[in-house]
Length: 435
Image 1: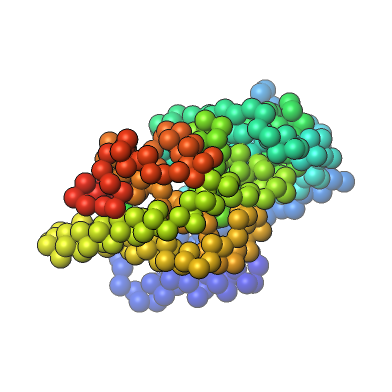
Image 2 (image 1 turned 180 degrees about the vertical axis):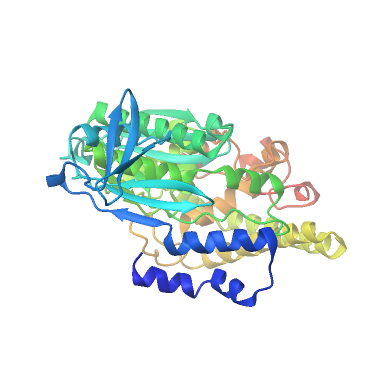
């Protein structure tokens, strides 16, 4: 054990507990065993190509099983059977047969020996690049699936499909879940290789999963905690680089919003595939211009006034509900929704006198003035689609085709007579809850 690790162990909580001498019997024995493992339970051997893999901790294949031969230092060896279902096991066995180097670390935990194998790989030569297009992917929690969009070099959508992740959610344990995620990663990379295109994803980011009592709601927390977003993307990235597939990561800002507002109604896509399409276009360097119909809508004072009236009414209703609510969790939820309503009002007010840029951001830079896509989102989804919200319970309905007339013409007056209540708010909005 290196001096730095030994020093860290000495200063750790185990040593402080031993100094207090407040334990006896089995708890004391367990603490001493753990302390001994921390001090002495580590053995590391670096791989060496000239030594055929690893001299002191060598893997051997005998009768279809994988064994670890441990050099005891006196000319004798101990042999341990390696038991694992790790998805990289086949790659490790390949290195054993090819006599390639691998590092081995043995650790002692609770009386059992665990082995960790690591090695370095040379990146494969690129066989699929974004010059031929990209396969863009977007992971979604409701329904739990992966949306894929094959985008050609000219920015047009060639093909799209979805892969369900529900089987991952039903996996009995973490190991089974990891194997399923690797299987899906192989499907994605194989598809990219088939078309000779790069893989495009959003740049990895932290996703808040919520906590009990914060008002996010149990259904949201359940979906968020099962959401293997970062884990799946890491596997896709690792496998793609190993197979010679170029990986392009883009800024995730507003990809879902632009997809829902522009490509979902325009191409009759689901909001998830539309978001993947935006990711693909962004990876190819395309900027998203605001359609003329939406530009006309943002310049319509009557539309903006109706949207502001809706959120003022909604904010007042939420304040009353919060004042009368005694349950702490529900009060937290109402506070979150009230904050959203105030945020929407702020966005709608910021548009006055400055319509902002008509291009979506691709590099994370803020557009001058208000962000038009976000203004459109708050101005359209709740104020004009609230009739559908009462049925679906979602902030964004699955069918976004009703936005097509607004997208191309900018006219929104027909909503007043054809889709229900006036978009200025009122009692109809009291049960609307965005998730």
